[in-house]
Image (cartoon, rainbow over all chains, first blue to last red; front, side):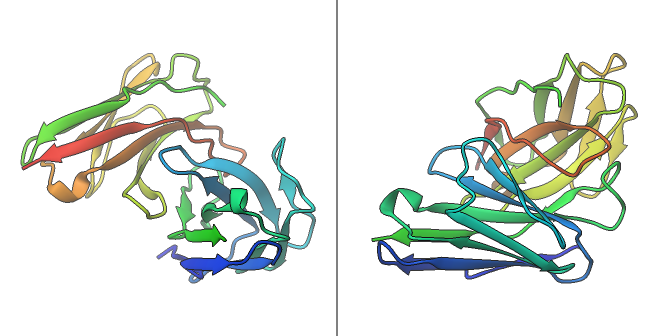
Length: 118
Length: 110
């Protein structure tokens, strides 16, 4: 159980275009999802917290107008990288909490989306 | 959330136990210790978590010291597929949010 599916697994786009990444919780409902970014040989960096039915909460230094997050249902959150540039090339990973509540329930992660902006 | 300190890298022989230490000396009473691992180019995989008692599951054992200031993740019989970056994370009980540190790069040698 507790499977998180991310799509696409990789995408190549041209500079200036926008890219949408989907994150779905397949067998549970997730009121909260998280988006991370990971550059080569570095750790995961939390970008934002996605809250179902309300605005996302962004970490310091993350541009909310560039990284649009929508969490319209309990099983789907989307991250749109707008006007992508080569420096946005990275590995984007989403995660969602399980049904057990945050006090004793792990986050489950998708398999990531590798974005390459040319 | 409390900060954790892990060795940058470790190695062990296939079939032997891998013991990965983590220091979390500023952990507070309601914070759990979580372990995840990330195999190259994949999302992190949950391994185990605990509050103060030792825990064991099909993947690993977690030993937490009595003062809770450090812990050890034990992979009892490491295989080549256990080569990954292992993250020890301390998390409070009111949020799902996980903040990743640098982790330990474990190399399992044939």
